[in-house]
Structure formats: C-alpha cells, structure tokens
Length: 213
Image (cartoon, rainbow, N blue to C red; front, side, top):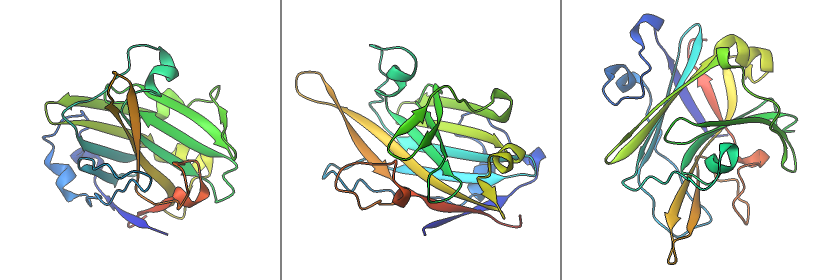
C-alpha cells in the first residue's frame, strides 16, 4: 500500500488560514505523485501535505490551476459535484463498510457523506461541524484548501487506528469543451487499476502514517 508520512507538530506552531504564506507547511512531506490513469490529458501540479497535533489532523492541498471552474447552474451538493474540487476518503478497512467522504471545492464548499460499496451514498450523514474546519483561497495561478479534522473523532469513527489512516486522495478537474460544456479529468494518488474512473474502489486507498503517534 502506498504510504504518506505525517509529521507531528506542536499545536501552537500551526495556523490554518487557507493562505500560501505559512512556513510551517515547509516541514511537511510534499506529495505530488498523482496520476490520471483514464486520460491522456496533462494536468497541472497538485501538492498534498499533512501534519498532526495531539488534537487535530491538518491537511493541505495546493493545486495549480489558472482556470478554476465553480458551477453556478445548481445548488448544494449538485453544484459542488460539477465543480473543480479535492477529495479525501477514509475507510475503516477494505470492506468499505462504511467509508467517509469529504469533497471540497476551491471556495471551501463541502460535500460530506458516508458511503458503502456499490456507491451507496448517505447524504443524511454529515461530519459534525465541531470536528472539522475548512479554509480556502483562490489565487491567480492556484487554489489552496486546508482541512482540520479532530483526532478524537477520527478514532471514534474507527478510521484512525494505531496511528494510521487508510485514505484516498483525489482531485476532479473540469475542463471546458467545444460548445461550452465541461468534462472532468479524474486524478488520484493511488491508481485503482479500474477500466473506468472510480474513486469508490477498495484499491484507490493508500495509508497516512502519523509519525511518533
């Protein structure tokens, strides 16, 4: 299983503001090894970083993109689902019964839900607001999304075990086609080896390992 090492930091050193000027993130491991197994199209750099404190897991995406697409034809989850976004999935084990999904667009809109195999999505379940914080900023050449997740709640869900989380890290990039419609490019950290794009596969997960847990 692909593994990403999450470095421990003192809580007082961290600032989550969705900006690109916090040197503390320089201490985190940079993950840029993303692929789009189902497309020949090139895509711009995606960087994922994570740190952890005694209280929180902190995740950060920096996505190079000069043409961010935010859907304005729908509302709520339907709109997020048609927009550029980054995604984190967490599972208890490879049965995917259940797993938890966070999909966040560049304006920090959040689509969160619980899921089970064969795309059984429970949108009535939501990540408790007290246990998550999302910040973002759109810049001329990129967008940044930062997510704070409460450590105790990750344990309560059963997805943080022995300092490890089985995690899918994804990106959806919508490109405008002739005629004005938009087509997604599906980008993943771990190639699930499926014939068609599918993040909701047991083979699309890697592991986040919290060092010194």
